[in-house]
Length: 336
Image (cartoon, rainbow, N blue to C red; front, side):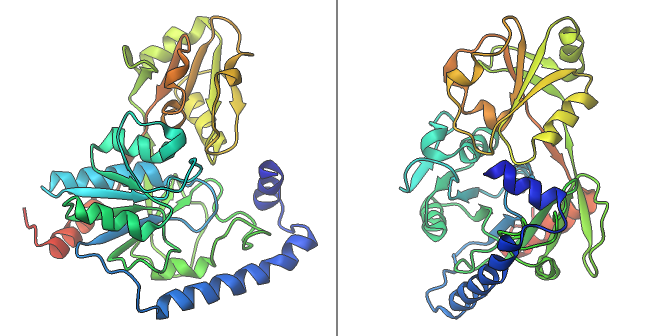
C-alpha cells in the first residue's frame, strides 16, 4: 500500500479519481480540527520556549538531523534542551523517558537515535503536550518538538519546516491524493523553511534555507570499529556491499552511498520498518551490510556480521545559526 501511494504521490500529476474525491473531505476535517484547537482554552503554553520542527508532507524529509543540530546549538549556548516526540511506529501509547540503549520497538527509532546523538532528555508520548509537560518537570529550559507542525493544541515560539529537496511536494495534492498534510501556503507562516538538499522549485514569498547532509565516518554496528568514510569505501571495493534502508526516502541513502564511492546492492523496506533478523538471511555471505543510523538502532541486537552504519550531520547556513541562536537568547534570557 505504501509503495502504491508513493507511486501516485511522487510520479503522477493526476492521482486516481477516488483519491481526489477524498482529498476535500480530508482538507475539511483538517481545517475544522485546527480551528477547534485554536479556540480551545486548554491549548498548552509551556513555561519554557518551544521550538517545533515539522514538515508539510507525510513521510520523512530530514527532520531528525535538523533536531540534532538545533540541540547542539542550544547546548553550546549553555541551555538544557529536551526533545518531545510521539515515537511514530512504536508499540504502545504510554509516556516514556527514552535512553540511548532503549528498545526502539517500544520507544520509536527516531527518539532512540535522538537520545544517542544529543544526550538530551527525550520523552515520547501519544499526547505531545504530555511529552512537553514531562520535559518541563525534568528541568529543561527549552523544548524541541520532533514533528508537530500540525499539532495546534501546543503553543510554540519558533516553527521550522523541512522540505525534501529531491521530492518536494510531490503532485501537490493533499492526503490521500498526494503527500501534503496541509496546503503549501502554510510555509508563509513558518519562521524558517529548510530544503534538505538543493531545492529546484520556487514558492512565492518563502525564503528557503539549504540543509546539506555531510558524512565523515562509518561505524560498526557493535560500535567497536570506526573508519573514515573514504577509507571504508576503498576497503569495500573487493567485497559485495548490501545496503539496507527503511526510511522515508531510501533513494537519498542510495545516492549518498554512490557519492562516497560505494557500489551497493539496495534493499528497501517501508519507513520505520520493524526489522527482524530474518530480514538479513538472504544477504550473501561475506557481504558488508551498510545501513542508516536510524535503522541501526533497531538492528544492534541481531549480532550481524560485517554490519555498519553511516551517521549524517546536518550542515546549516551560518546566517541561520546566528539568527536562530539570537532568537533563543532573547526567548530564554541567555545571552552567553
